[in-house]
Image 1 (cartoon, rainbow, N blue to C red):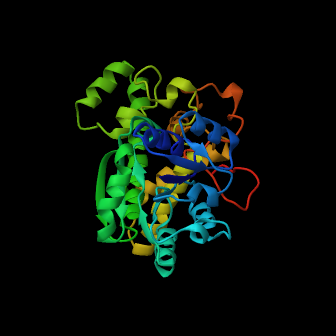
Image 2 (image 1 turned 45 degrees about the horizontal axis):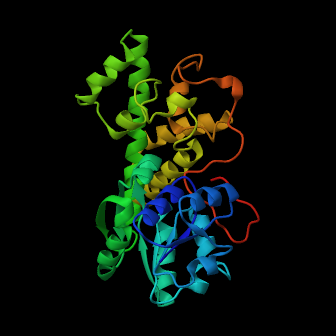
Image 3 (image 1 turned 90 degrees about the vertical axis):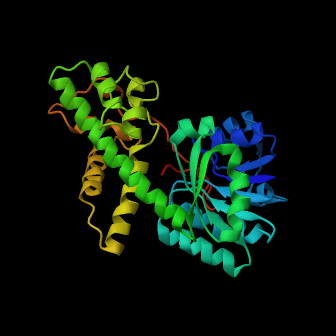
Length: 326
């Protein structure tokens, strides 16, 4: 039996795949809509973390930020308070290395077993059960973690010891957003030079400019089905979450002395969108920053930023009365 804390745009489809594989899943999230969607996928919704964890073999967290992960672990009625030595604790959130290290150490001090298990593949990968998992933790836990993850995963790779999974994730996401900048700049320059957008995309797809971002998030409407540009740049990966992930890489760069000028530029792009009130729009809307008038195909600014809060991950801080966006 799985306990799952955080049933947002990633946690929802991930738990649905666990249920499809014949597993019992008990989930918890502060957001009623997220709970309703997860329940429709077969998840049993628990009223609190303790009841979600009761009798669980594995406890997953999928939350927006490190502070949220710390909160659900530390809370008087949280994970550490209800975990047993028989449970495997796994965090699939994208957090800072220090938070992951803190959860590893705190779990070990309590006689509990923990694995950092972040993912790559986005909402589409979560729905299709093709996510790539990156595992960090004690070697003897890796086989068990891999088996628990299997119904959600296209590939699971052991990155190394504690925090190595999240370290790999931070570096990977930094590279993703740098690749996204390349797709944004290339798409807009090609269009201004008079190239047919679909023809240019086909050329890049068999040439050296090809990347996951270009194949999945191409910021021009009518080219690929998975692009946010087809839906007025409604978020598949929110700008504020992208900015958070880049900031994690930049912080790691400062700690290690590695210069990251391209990541710095990506952060500036996201900051510009956020300053315009577009934090909840898709991060591929950075194309708007590249043209003098900000007028790009696929984006209608009249409606303004989307109402409500969306998140690529769930939120389940037990100390807060309502779910917060990241």
